[in-house]
Length: 338
Image 1 (cartoon, one colour):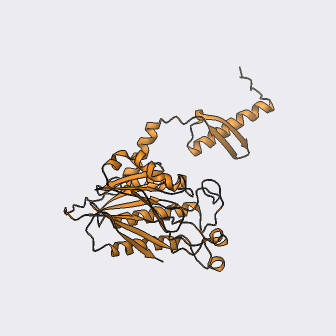
Image 2 (cartoon, rainbow, N blue to C red):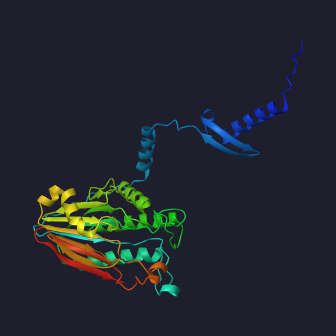
């Protein structure tokens, strides 16, 4: 006896065909069909929404670490001789703004990512040359501080202020990452390095991710340490020196010394010479507040349309460094002007 064929209604036939098309699409894309929550289909175009990822956090983390193991380079430990006459070199390329576009036609000052990277490298070379007469056993490198110009695909800062840019955001990120790697590899040849990160207003999100990726890159090195937390104020002790750093767009300048004492009480009680290096304003400001010297650093970045229009233009452009004796505090300021 012949089995009668089941004749589907038009709407039932459409459901079956859509189901087959979905199965084919999932197979081609490597998606688990049982994880599809809902989908929209028209012709060969799918918009598929999956249910929650079945992978656990631990599985995702383990995969990430496994991937990084393939790319994280090995660094041979550099053994150094101890000396009684030691100094700390502080280097802080302030407000580099990689990705910023400044046109000499409008402002008289040309600036882009290539110029930014070149100035940082040239400035650090200049600081190292000027400090060559001192016995340096430690380098404090302060990163962040608007190293990137924008924080969104729409060329805006974190808070949404539009900026003139010379390239796409991912190009700036890649150049900044390569710059930090090159600079830190160079500095490690002179002395052990401590990298500290200051969150900032132009790149609050991407600046943190950049510094975190740099920490991951150097994770196998014994000659460099990191503080890349999202804390807005950082502290570091070197001998009798307490050195604080912050971007400078948050707490009031006159409140920083008390915040330093409150947030780093052990460092405060163990030190005599105290300093806070700030950024953000692109020009030199230095003032003593009791026992704490608060000093704003110059920037190497060019003058864009907004700064030119408002007259914020003629401060010297520079990369700055500072030398601290373990016993006598800050003993020298070093400036590489452009």
